[in-house]
Length: 481
Image (tube, rainbow, N blue to C red; front, top):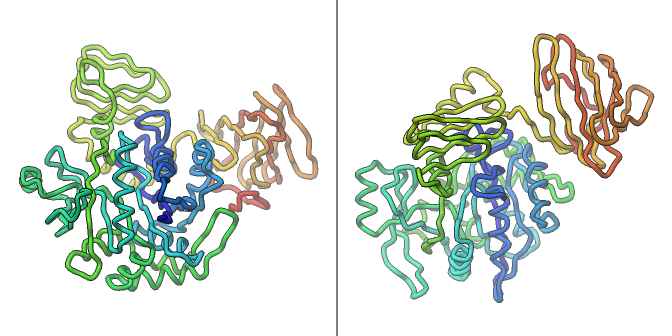
């Protein structure tokens, strides 16, 4: 029996999929190829690995602290929350430190399980083929070394890393790995495709926890030492484990590939590759999203309220209002309430430059959507002007905002659905539909939903400063400061 710990790496911001993917709601939590988000799809794939000779332990989910409740909500929808543990990074440090946290957690029970490591932001069309390839990888990794899942290329792609295999090891289709190449130019990628000796590196790894820690100790002992120090001073709150912020912030930002795997060929850590032919895509840009979704007779992929006239080979994604096109070809059009992207489909990799410009201009559109999710629910900033802002707020059943006050604004609340429990100063009272209240500037207050149905209110803020950082919390059930 093989003891397996699935590790899902949930970092990354997916900047090439802006304006849908943003730092506060990144690519892995979007539904781009169906009803399930990419994160949810990865959880389902991990759970399907159990078999006659394979025992699955709890999922390990490595992510930034800010995304924990977003992930937990989506995890609850897959009925897997009770069998998952969150490793929360205080700062992003790439995949090598993330995997090290997972390996240390996996060994904390005194065992040495096999880790099945996969990113949370990929699409796999054929789940049964994925399951079979990973199960083969597990049986190979049990013998020691590192096993990669390699994707046979179908085009000369310049945006992926490549794995060169040097010879088949067994009849089950496991290959020895000779070398790695990162993002070749077009001519080189074409030669790789024609040679038949290369696969794409999909960023999926299978190896024992002890193998990873030993290899990291050999090739990057600095990373191992700092992550171990952060781990030894960790804090645990139920399903959430947090490494020490001071030590973890000092860890070099490095990928699994650069830190370890690309150094393994020819070393004491053998590297093997199992081909994965399962309709894989990393959905790295809007053109890739177009490729994996069903197109109409004119080659168009659409989502939402869309009206096309004389339009071909385009992706049109509407989230809030009607989007119509006339006489266009090979475009990407993505509409959200606060931003619209129009791009040549062949240039969709350059969307990252838009995000970089937004960051340089200190604009919030790179970070948050107009609709912002919080552990208690969400709010949607539907209008604002000089000295006022209007929000639509929904609070989950039995959930509560923090006990707080604002120095620079007053708030008016109108209940439009459900029942609100309001704390304002030394009073606590209930409001029902069509009832309202006023929260004076500087008054300590709290909004809660005591009911079993969602609570929805309209909030009108007024004052000289209406930024989200004008908040002083006195108590919060979610541990926020």
